[in-house]
Image (cartoon, rainbow, N blue to C red; front, side, top):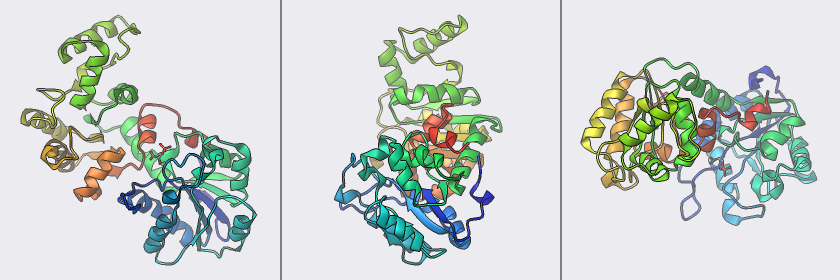
Length: 371
Ligand code: 3PG
């Protein structure tokens, strides 16, 4: 995979796919600009290298039509604030007028295209639409790790038409996640919170290959039990060990963890609104021994201050451990941002679904398209 630094970008139109899919509040204001900030190193590198910078992104799920609240004007304002000069903002993302604007752009200046998903062709991965986007650049940069699991026009279509490379953020994401997934310094502890076990069981199994301990939330454990019809967690672990030793997959009981001996679940009621003190202590002890930590997903009803004690204790234990720490997932990042802790981790991933897919061992189409 080529890096942005492998190209001479001076005076060239560089079309950058960013992930500015940021959370908005009820008034349509950006409530967390973490993803915008993370895109700045590539943008600043291109400014300093005197490239003509054309940025593109999606925001939300407008479903192929213009949705006023999902226009990217507020994002343009935020970028302008960070780069400290005004930037251009288009009303669409394709067409001859925008092509003309891209050609007129001065070196070191920025143009932001309108929400890509106002065109249904983006999510349909329409090749004609991808071509029209490609007319806007001489070089394509993918800096949108968060959408690399999507086979969509701006992610996998455009790189078929232009010389392509990874941006600085995408490179950092891959490097950090590989350091956790492929060659972690041991002991390694993975902490997987939240719910939705369907999207996480592959991730739990894949990460368990290298992790020494895998702490999972009560909610995930509870979901596993309800899907498999076991009464207790211990009973379920015994079952996994037994079927694994026979080297068979039990199709009927559908969720069969490969490394049950590494899994730790909170004690007490699995559906509790927060983890209890006993569990916090056990988790803290494991975390304190770790040299590498991966954390995705908060615990319990963390959004209510009353029940945030467990998630906060996990965050603090990770920071105190001084281990190489990678954190990701929208809710976790939002939580850490509110606590003003985001800078205390070695790497905070911008990917939600993309991070889970990558750490599940899947090949992400957006990364594959650059190879
Ligand atoms: C995300 O928020 O995870 C990315 O921006 C991808 O968004 P999507 O799930 O709507 O494709």
